[in-house]
Length: 437
Image 1 (cartoon, helix red, strand yellow):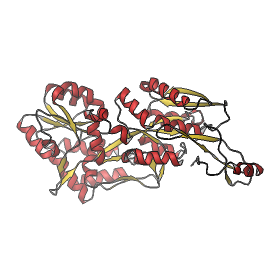
Image 2 (tube, one colour; image 1 turned 135 degrees about the vertical axis):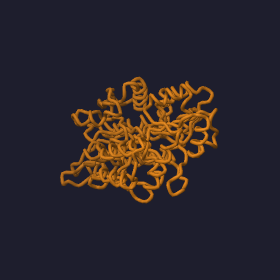
Image 3 (spheres, helix red, strand yellow; image 1 turned 120 degrees about the vertical axis):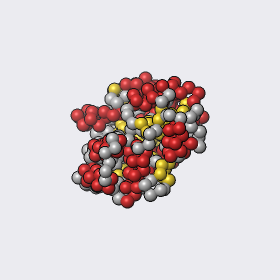
Image 4 (cartoon, one colour; image 1 turned 90 degrees about the vertical axis):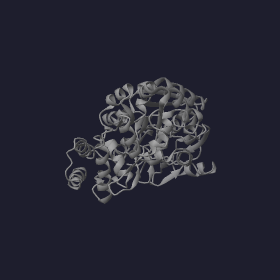
């Protein structure tokens, strides 16, 4: 199901013509990236079933003074920030009677909560981008079609975040953050900036120093770095079936590179607790992880705290390949059953504009999806976010990864870590067969 809000293109004289035909409309103010309001109107259907475009109405899209109630969902840790942002939104429309209700629903739980009762769900809600396909398939989101909104997203949001909000050639939500992904933390007293460009060099230097390089290869989220970096593709077909080509010639070369990595005496795997304890006691000199571990790793390494993109690795056929990664974002969507969709879109734009992405970073150290906000001195000074931004150039969105992928990928990585790989091609064939079944 696709619902649309269309910008007004007719003059006021058109209103009388439409009125004679019996059409009606509720317009809306669209908020530009800079936060200024411009007027727009929704498309309605005339008695004949033909779409008619209504004339402009006062800012906010309803008669002045009429109550417009909007419900907003966001995580617990962002309630105070959302309160501030929604109050500033209401200040843009002093003649409007906005009643904005905040509810606590984490981005990770947004689709599950929405599914319980779509009609009672929030008008505007934040969600993790890997839920986008579920929302679109359920007809749960208004497509972003207003000219000003699209111009902002396409011109002022980073490419990975735009892709994460897109499906089947359309944009379905407003990118809010670009904060979920992974990169390389390292001890700068062990490795130079030149060392960390190449995995082979790092392994040799770490082994000589009696140190370890950490990566959870048995986790499908991380092991994909090798395959995708060497041209591997994960996609979903029109029917929703998972597509994967990790067992082709390039996939075999990537798997051979992974095997070489895990067989190094300097390799170490495990969970976050292993990584943090190893950094703290000095046994781990570098590790692949994300921003959620930044504070602990920074405290452990002190002046030697450093981070950068993932290194290049050597494939089985001798090529040097830049490791890829999954990049995740947080999006803000508008419920397709909202009673005030135009105003809800205005609010979604407001919550994700440059100013508020900067505020979100200042309050929570969350990476902005807005290009200008991400390029600020404050964000660049954040070592982990700077590394994440660097790695984002080689990252792909996770929205095309279905549930069938994770368990077979984990089993493949576990077998490699345990030294149980005897016939890599057969293992790859088995893995891909399970992923695509």
